[in-house]
Image (cartoon, rainbow, N blue to C red; front, side, top):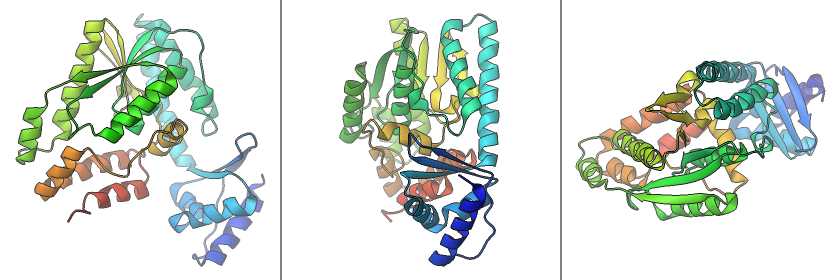
Length: 335
């Protein structure tokens, strides 16, 4: 599709809607006929905003005018950053392979990264599948969209998956999250196990306002998952962390290889949601678990630490500013 034609159409749509007049800049436009999707690559984020329009109105009107199933806009500067991060992840994997550390398994992730680098932003993670068995792996499945994404991708990469969920009780792991876990395990036909855990000390002290619970809770869950992996003698453990990115997305400790899969692939929250939505996994526009919600209500000053966590993902380009704003506003709706 001609960029000049799209540029003119977008400028006219902006004028019809009542947006201010700006020069619309388009670096490239790609139409995927099979997926009925138009991908527009803008030079920078400000150009991306001009194409999307306030509240997404311009992109929505463009979708209707063109009669396409979806319009997706990317900033070229964001693509450069994604590629750089994936290159750093790739370098880390290559260094581990050269040392003879899990070479067969790491080559799977190396090949995935190389192909994603070549084809981004058109690359479709769900279409990248490997039929050959690549060994056992544990996936820490919390029931949220990030860990569900990791479970789906790991399964597609040919690993024999065992999904494990640490269960501290419903104040941290509510029923709707367990429904996601049950639904995904059944759809993917993978083994799943709950690990009961006592978090009463964290819950008690958090509800007394002694600390923000997320850091301690996350560390204890990680420790439980890694201990389980050691007991089962499974050497690869996959988590759903979006941070840390680049070389820190792959780490070796105590002969266990830890991969933070969304971070390894430099996936955005939007991409993660698109993948899991095809498996009927429901995300929620709420930050954190019921325990965190109670802590926020009782001790409003602790909201600042939740905001800091949201901003970390926003600075990294994982969350769009609008997504971050929705999450932050959600922290204050009880006031």
